[in-house]
Structure formats: C-alpha cells, structure tokens
Length: 519
Image (tube, rainbow, N blue to C red; front, side, top):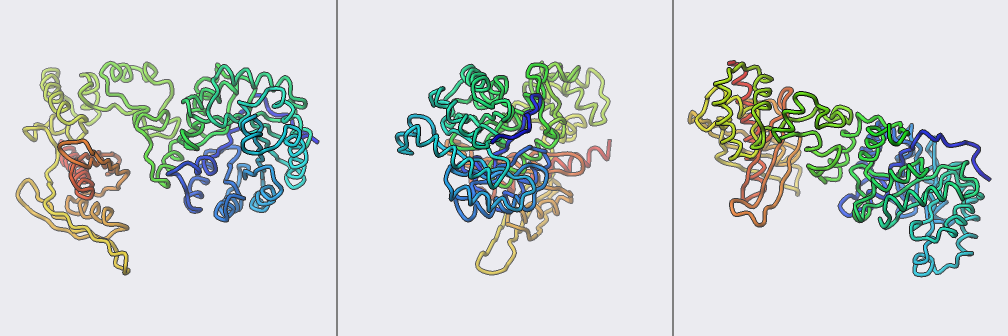
C-alpha cells in the first residue's frame, strides 16, 4: 500500500523538529506555553511539518503535542513514535485534534543498534517494520519511517528496510545521520543510491535528518537534497541533541540564495526567520551567538573599513543577501576601531550633520582614539564628537549613585527598585518603581529619572572569571523612539552591572535626543 501522490521534485519540504529533537537538548526544555510561542512562530514561517514532540515520552509531551495539534493550523502536525503499538497509539491519540497529522516511526537498523540496543535479528526488524508501519497507516494516512542510524547501516539491508516500509504504507522515508558521522560526498552518494534502488521510491518523499557532531549538518543536508532528498529535518538556531541539528535558517537561505545551483525552493516566509529565532532564544533563555549565520547579531554587521566602504557603495560587494529578507531591521555599519573615514562620514550625514573635509579629518582622529578605548562608538557618542559637547566624547549626563532591589517570594509584594542617580550639573534624583522583577523595575526607574521613554530589547550578562577589572559584564540594548542604543558595563555584582549598562544606554538616548533637538 503506497501513496498515490507523486512528490514535487522542485519543492523541498521543511520539517521542523525544534519542539522535539531541539527541545531534548540540555538547556532547551520548554513548558507547553513556551512551546506554543515557538509553534506560532513556525506557523508564521510557513513550515511544512511541525514535529511537536514525542507523545509516548511523558504526559507533558503528550499534552504539548495535543495542544499544538489543537491550536496550530496550516502545517502538518507530527509526533515521533518508536515502532511499537503503544507509542503509535499514544501519537495517534495526541494528534487527534490536528487537521493535518503525521506519525513518525523509527527503529534502529545499523549493526550496533540491532545487536547492542534492540537484541533483534535483521529478519525480526523487517517483520516489525512491515507490521507496525501498516498498523500506523491504518490510523493515519501520512506516515514517516526512519531507519535509525541509517548512515552506519549496510546498504543492501537499508534498501530492504525502506522497501518494507514503503510496501506497508509509509509516505516519507527519512534517512537520519543519527550521530553526525557522514560527509557531504557520502550522503549525496547514499541518497542517489537509495532513490535509484528502493522499490516504489518515486511514490514517496525522501527526507534527510543530520546532526552537527562534526559541524557538517547543514552541508550534509544540502548534499542530500542534491542526491534526491525533498524534505529537510531541521531546527531553529540549529538546536538539538548534542551539537544540534541542521539549522533551519541556514538550510533555507542556502537554497534561496543559491537557487541557481540547487534548482529547488521551499515555501518558507523568510522575513519571519529572525523573529522566530528570537522567539526561541527568548523562551529558552539561550542567546543567539553573535557570529551565528543568518540570525546572529554580526550576520549583517560591518566594522572593517574596507568592507564598510564597499557596502556603502554597493551592498552586494560584501553581502550575498539582504538583512530585511530574513526579517532583521537592516544591515549594520558598526563604528569601531577598524572603521574608515567613508563609514564615519556616511553616519554623520545620516544623523543630519554637514561637516567639511577639514572638520571630518579632526573628528576622525578623535573618533579613532575613542574607538580604541570603547570598542564600539554609538550614534550618541558621535553626536558628542561632532558638536564638541564634551572633552572625551562620551555621551550621557547621568551616573548611578545608589541601587536598591527587592523581591519577596513569600508574600504578594511586587518586586521593586529604588535608584538614585546624579546629573552632571550636580542634581540628584531618586525614583522607586515596581516591575515584573527587580531588574525590570530598575530599568523603569532609570528611564523615569532620565525622562527617556525606553523599552528593553535585550540584556546579556556574562561572568568574567578571569577578568581583573570586574567579574560581570552586562550589555543592555534599549529602544527609544525609532533607534536602538547599547550600553556596556562591568561590575562585581550582577544587579549593579545590569543597572549600570541600562544607564549607559539611557544616557545615549537622552544625549541623542538633546543633541538632535539642538542641531
């Protein structure tokens, strides 16, 4: 029994496993409400399939699969199941509310899995595949079969296992690199072989599921597509078991950017990629590395003077895709010690100032000295340099003088913060605010003192165990009006570092507003 639907050879399905394989990774476990935040982001991304969990793994996983199946429309909702009656029943029960559903069954086929884990012979596994894939198909028309550890399975036996699954009614054959062992050349050859040798291959979709143990998950997935795979199993930000899965954003944008090479496409709404990556980062409390491809803070940022000059002349000199295409605000010219005069001049002009060449040369010398000391020069800093408002070029009139934070978890008292700050003119102000937590309240108090209407975008805290000048580094990004400002501070205490970083960012916003109003 096989599907009558012939797969579209030009369409690559995106099977997202963020909520299943991704969530299994240490540090990424999600409650049901967090899973729903990610599931909605995946729906907005227009992924083809959402693997919502492993229903038989726990009551919580079953509830999560059922909740996603009940509330998310558009993508097919999938549950993983071992090749057992009980797991299949649990998956079918959890998926019952879904308008489009899939059961994803798996069993180990490599010698190591057969002998060490399953204690089953080749024939026993083939019998189980035929019987239980048929059983799953009796309750759901869309069945995916995975021979676990396929990469280390003998090719003739892999063909036999896949053929048994197709005969029993599987509609998708997933060939997983369970341990991240293969290479692009090997996996291309394997998929080419299977597509040519599995009976009924033209009636099913071949899928690739690659892990990143050797850092080749995306490359291997793309090689599998070249070999005939028309489904990529992946996860947002590349999260997953051990070193992670194939990164959704990287695979999708590789296919989109190099469509001339791959000749296939996905249905992903790419402008929703960055918001989805941010949503996952937020609910799991795992920041995206700055240098992460596609969605990292530096993915479209330029500090090198040579690169900045090229990008200002034509973005394609150093950018192969647009930041806006993945939902990021825009490319970023970061002013730092590697920046050149062209970038400095362009930013000054964008801020509304018109300076002559002689004045630009003077500002450039001051800018280089400041950049050496501070690593990154903000718009507010630049305004100070242009207007000559301070001797050292640093922006901001306010300094923290006292911080009090309180949170009592034994009663209903809302967390609060009392902040005292001193203006450069000698005036002191103290404000007490409440918030969702003491840090949130502190940010509100800092904004109230400085009279800045700001919104916290991100706060990164890092313990610097080997640092001489401080133990905690805080970086706060705030949004005020239509601009973002970044504050960095180092303090011994976490709370002090966070508040100090807020103050630096708010100072920049206040200085920017004052300077532009006077310009």
